[in-house]
Length: 296
Image (spheres, rainbow, N blue to C red):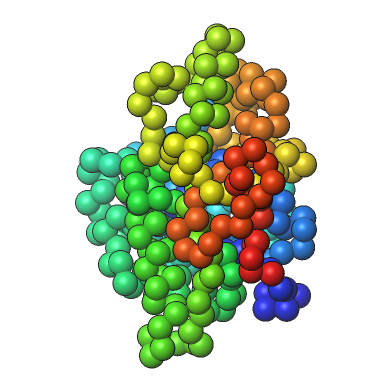
């Protein structure tokens, strides 16, 4: 079925293969299962990622530099697990290279995403927006969640593309207005509670103090506007995480313990709306419970 034949169309913009599964996998699987057209645009191949599979260590950027090509297959397998059939790389596979963590020399490579011309990259996404015509777009906040340059750039490109896609006389195709834009977020109370429970069980989340400073994607509860309960799709999300084997050690002790904390750890995903209006839901926080609420 053509995307435009589907009344509900969701577009997600992520930086590297595996980002989509960790942050929004339950949401993607939930809407795919409900029959919505879900489109994923990934901005890089993730060439600079750490390789967690010893027998694939030769793929690392400082050795054979074949990780990006390998991760194309991992992403395809993850999308199959989530039920998502429309996934693309911005400008095609390899158009933009993974920039690595902030402050590394890899940030200076002329072919990396961090060095991309903003409007040029945004126009590549505009073409997708005008093709798919999503009512809803999901991406990161201004800090990219935790300060990774590719996440920050994905945010900038997505927001600029939303702006440009709606303008007459800009690029090819008919203008399209995205009605609702969301940034991924995590409510502070739930994150701190989960971190405390993990620490008490003897498997703390490295680098995150339950009582200390948290990454920017963790926001005050009142800043969260929307929650998607994807508990029914947790198995699909975990299968997708397993597909990203070079990046995610699903069989490690942290994941095993997280599973004991219940489906909320992996199946409940939160957002804050930055374009359009959230429709309050019946839950205790009044959070909106459907990304398409008020649209269809």
